[in-house]
Image (tube, rainbow over all chains, first blue to last red; front, side, top):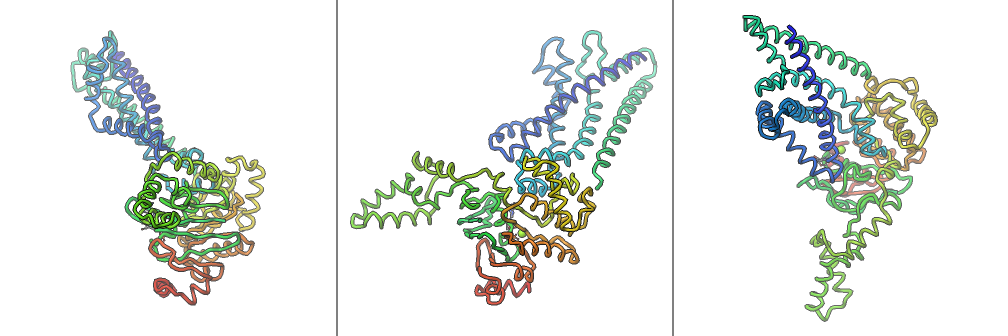
Length: 218
Length: 307
Ligand SMILES: Nc1ncnc2c1ncn2[C@@H]1O[C@H](COP(=O)(O)OP(=O)(O)O)[C@@H](O)[C@H]1O
Ligand SMILES: [Mg+2]
């Protein structure tokens, strides 16, 4: 059973670090893309960002993982880090789209009203648009983190057992396989753990969502 | 107050404004009427640069809001390479013509055929830069002087009524929070909605929203108010309360430009009427001239359809 908990811990660590990378990256990319509509110097960075999101959302994460681990960062002992980085970069592409979609879901009239009063684009974004967009963004990002958590299971595919680390729940399930003579049971135990974590996360997202709704009594 | 000088506005291939000029004097109440899609909103939105004109200039008093349109400045056209080259060509070809004659032909030819290019030499560029430096203002500053009221109110949904009124003056550092709230409460009292100060917009009726949107603009002490069909999105029973508020402002001498389909109101409140058709001002005059004695067949046809 200890193996499972170790695997669980690793899964959580990978998810949290990758999610943080994804959030930071996604936020920056979204910012670049959005400000391009108002700032001509952002046009070229926005195109680069567009290529990034298109490529990382348009190809399977397993493929990205293989390329990153065995080609781009083919450094001995770097496997787990390359994997985390890949998940982070992949997640960033989705997060940036969630943020962008959240912002463009806000009625254009809100921006126009702010600008017509003499507020700058930045001030209008911060005071008017973002507070409304965040209500759509937070749940979307929550779902993205859940997807990320489940995706990290494919890390077993690259055999990322760095040193003595058993690197994820699936790897843990292999270990259990030796002591529990029923493969199906292993799968079920690991599955139950995933289910529990996802359920917990969903619950947390629901609470946050409710809070956000309550703050604007509309 | 506002000078619109020969503006054109294209959305990609679609030409929406095709050379519109008008002057809004202080104290005037100019009503814009015309068929749907004729460019009324676009013209209004060009006045505070929510839309940037493709050609032409917009001035607020002595402040230039757009970039310089070289076609409106003969002395700048004369500095262009195109002009200089053509001038010497023409002079050679027509030695009998005087310089003044060539100049006047050339200027109208350049204007007509849109001959100026993006790059027309150093002198030309410098002249434009200097003119802009002298006259152009930060659009964010200019907009403080021009209140705008939208068809769909556009109250800030994430803010309470009082915060809708105070956000801009406070954020821009024009007033302290206390001062801004005091002004806001006076304005709310004026429209009889002081009890709504802590409500969110979603809890208000359309008429209430629009009246609050109007006083939100007033809280900035604008010199001119721009209204884009302020009653078109309202249930009929709420139209009156909004029109009454606008009439009050009119009586106080507020300068305004109003796009509206309320012809009775236009006639009552307007000092001048502009009839727009297909991206141009097709007819203008006092309300009685335009409504009672229209000259342009398009105006006659339009009025027949709406009255
Ligand atoms: N942002 C825009 N992008 C593309 N076309 C637009 C845009 N705004 C207005 N138009 C088009 O310009 C024309 C004039 O619109 P508008 O100025 O709103 O007319 P009006 O207010 O007189 O009904 C319409 O054909 C409209 O579809
Ligand atoms: Mg319109």
